[in-house]
Length: 346
Ligand code: F6P
Image (cartoon, rainbow, N blue to C red; front, side, top):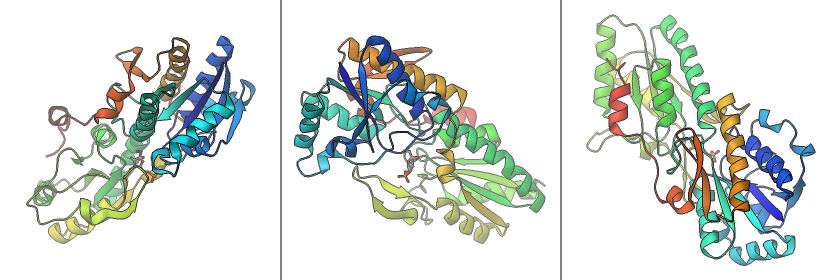
């Protein structure tokens, strides 16, 4: 049996551990594994390499993806579906394991509905995929963000400043919430709960009046100002670039907040954007282990012919769920969880 695999969408610490899991478990089952280059683009262009236990040796320790990635959407390309079918035919591939987030798995699901044998592995640092408790990459990204916040405390304290730190999370504030709580940010702003700039500034001024000489504001890149607030956020930071899945490239809310806070409170303010630092580098032990388990499960799904399914973490168990459940809706931070855990805003 010949099985193809690919990594699509943003890279994510742990991708290589999944690839290694697929190859080593595949070898045990006597399967041949081929890896497509640059996500769905490699499938469209029939570009791939054979993956053997030798060329995946120890790659679980490395960040990024040895297969490279892209945000290509085959359904947006001319003759996209026909080209995918052509590649499947010429490679003699029996099944395809797609490793990715909402967009990549959405393509895998559409292909499955059109008769292609696909299975999925959930990936995103944002942790916003439904039907799994955690995605790999999230733990690593959160640890990087928490370390950054730890470091910002000392410089903010030394200068009596407000430091605004922008953290990844387009639609969901999971990284910002967990890193913000763990790192002791004084204000945490996430996309799920639109904020009022007046309230942010009131809290910062109150802290100063109480003798608290500095403050940290953790803001998710996708955080938005509440309706009715004259302050612009989301719209102001759109860069205008839109990918093949319709995602807008977001960047800069921290800078907008920096200027607005300084203007309204008179407190010296600085900002930092963590950006892709959160996605680069070695995965945490948690992510290496979870990703390995997902890779092994993906091979099991192929063996059991459970196509249209995705590996998923439920509690401590790796189970399978229909791909359509994963791509149907986003897993967002519940307001209740935010209210229970954000106990430092005062
Ligand atoms: O979806 C993961 C993610 O890291 C988001 O948090 C972020 O908005 C986006 O990818 C950035 O994508 P790119 O690497 O294309 O700039």
